[in-house]
Length: 90
Image 1 (cartoon, rainbow, N blue to C red):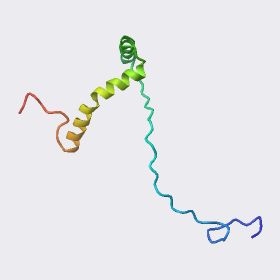
Image 2: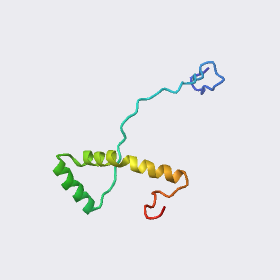
Image 3: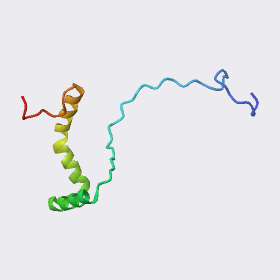
């Protein structure tokens, strides 16, 4: 093959890639960014200071303490039920 010819899959110079088995990549932390309105941002700053945390760790704490409730609501929605049970009506 001349140096000016492009190799093709049929060319003996180009080998086909072997299928790569899916490797289990370790889970990595994911960064999530959001914009907070001034009042919420000030509240987060104030509460984080009181807890001796930075805002990122305060938000992580709030999420960890409340995520189960949102998982339950999501499951209800997926099941075709209202997001929350109405305590006023049986």
